[in-house]
Amino acid sequence: MRVAVEGGDLAVEVHDGGTAPVLAIHGVSGSRKLWNWVATHDITLVTPDLRGRGDSSNLAGATIKQHADDMVRVLDALELDSATVAGMSMGGYVAVDLAVRYPDRVRALVLVDGGLPMPAHAQLTEETLTAVMAPQLAARQRTWTLDDYLAVHATLNPLTDVTDPLIREYYAHDLTADGHLRLSAETLAADTKDVVFGSSRWQELTVPTWFVHAEWSTGPDSPPAYSVERAHAYASELAVLHEPVLITGVDHGGTVMTAAGAAVTAEVLAEALKHAAN
Image (tube, rainbow, N blue to C red):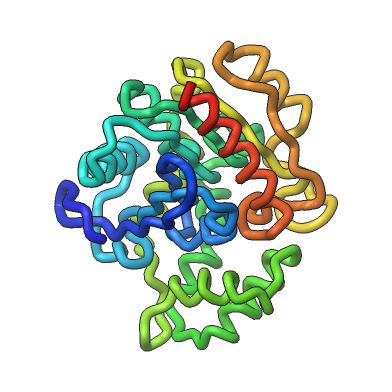
């Protein structure tokens, strides 16, 4: 479906399941297909392509605040007064902003390896961030076949299974018919800077919140985005934050893009949905 927002419209997919709807928000370079693995667990998911990505790639103007405002329009279009909201990576920061500025629209919040300050961000500068983003921006300049695109991501994401049909569907959604990326360079840069250098309002959260985090960042034994100690420190600082859930044996993307990670994330979502229904 298409949902009217400021400046155009968003593409939104609804996965019918056996639960109340969950508004699920993807990460900075992802798309709505990120949630396909979680959808296999009979959870009703509302999954938008955010501005500048996938079927919303022609819609300009991105900030965390703008994305959150767009999510309100999605809830309005589906006639949902409120919903449980999940956000992965950058989507977690969007979900936090949504819950802080529109708390009546969020029944419960599930943050997946994002949304809370990442210690690594404190070490980044404008120059180092530009260098980190360079490969993603350069990828927009070439023409891809799906197999070539998958091969690159198999190297970057060693824990994902390129033979998985859902992986192929996820990465195929990134490409136009002629093999170009459906990802706005301007949006990618703006959103990444907003996440890294912006101010998260997580300490203002008032809705019940769950936090799921990965053992690694990219591949086995890589430093995680959130250590166990840091995750528990956040829980001690925020009364509405439930006990953090560590997913072992997965990295950042694997929290939702592997069968093992999606199973744990779906279990936490089920807990949040149950809490929201009471």
